[in-house]
Image (tube, rainbow, N blue to C red):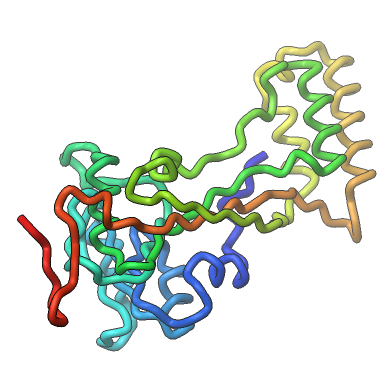
Length: 258
């Protein structure tokens, strides 16, 4: 029942994630669409991705500009100077180059902390199905009469450990409702393709599909079905006091004790 791939960040959500005013943003693993939206809104963007081809795609068809810089890099080895950004925006789970070791989450947290200016934050989101909508609850209840674990997947963001990191002690959260249009035939096919459903006898299967269609009839508006989701956004504010090599400023210059 996943339609997450068809969803995009609402303007209000993206604005909440990065703030109201144009700032310098390190976009880590963000899509081309999100990067383009940030540049269009006046932000200066340093886009970092472990894949060289994706970096090239971010710059394709765009004139050379200081508004967007694309760099190959990984979260635990950020190729940027300390305090370069007011916001680090995480576009998805950590990814590393093929053949390289897995990302060290602890080192990534420290690298992101160093990349942020005092007062800055790292931001991200995850999209989960909203099971509070009545027709979705009814469909889940029906499917679990066949399979107790049916429709249990709801996505994930992959950064839960960052939200408990000592480098980011203050967390803000906000949720946004999303709707994904979906065809009735796709939902019926999703039900029919379940392993437990395919094993039913023909009469039981027809009865189940009939009940599914009744639920969808009650949910349809203007001949369109829409799946409800919640976009769970968060901002984690940096605290440089927790760095093992503290960052400080003196006489207008950056000081990083070694």
